[in-house]
Image (cartoon, rainbow, N blue to C red; front, side, top):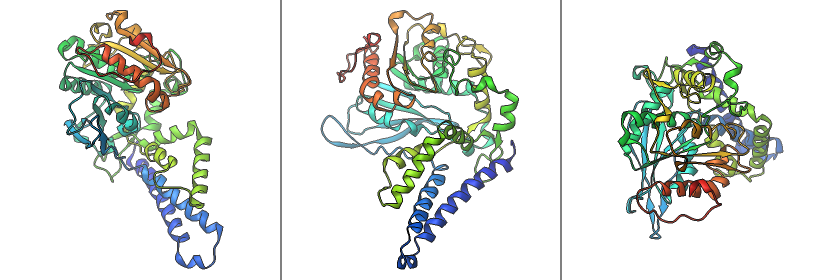
Length: 426
């Protein structure tokens, strides 16, 4: 499984299915068939259209799609997406709004690198742009990074975050979503020892596996069921000849996608059958709810083998963050050294990926932080996606996070729309 042939075989299967879909659509849409209307041809064309789009999206990086923004002056302003720090494995980008006075709330949004692009947080970014100056980590697809760029594991990831925080300065408020929560906590602790003046003012951890053993789920318990040898043999492949990263060992995004889909296979199968039916009836559109969701969900990226394996071994198997035993370049990163950065955790009561209890474990690790600078919130009836991009985020969690940011800012901030009460954010 570790050879280019296996990677190219998966790409060939994807490409073939895309071609079959395009062929079915073209054949069933042939004008001469209109002389003899046949419902079977309508279904064939619909199947082809949905199939082609499905397999085509798997190798396309989604666009941010954030082009204009209505500011307080009532005018629509263009949104410029600018790269402010460029690195081989990921950039720091800024959503700049010309003509709008820079917001005093400067937010670094740390996006997950777990198979999807940072655009998975598109709705999160759009909701924060209203009140904040938003920066985000934009991780690169490992298949596009030449082998000459070297390795990238959890320690490198942590040092990337350290560099991004240093660049943004001490008035930054960091929000880490899901997978990067443990490493963002480690990066903050690293700065607490190495460069205290560069520490952010606050750190909000949303649905992250700080302590995977606190409340195990099928996802976080995966590391306990397999050996590292099994993972290397079955999950790691070398990038094929089609991409610039040819020869690089990766955990392919297509494998990750198959894992995602298998978790809710029946639901996804029904969603695609329903979409084919809608397409056959002429009720589907290019940007309908199905296509908006799956255009993002199906767009996957490869992770470097060393990042994937070190995440499983050090974060999930050995629980180095949970035990406060994490090291970077041989030096212990003591989370207890965080003494001046306010920390808030957010969890969803129905999160089946990072269940309640996993993220709040961060507060126990911050032994050097007074209780007055710790906060937590569990959102009732919210699942994993809802706590950072769904209705729960928009209506409840986002206002609470902004309140927490304001409470830990040096100057008075603009008022935020009221939300449900949360003593931790006072």
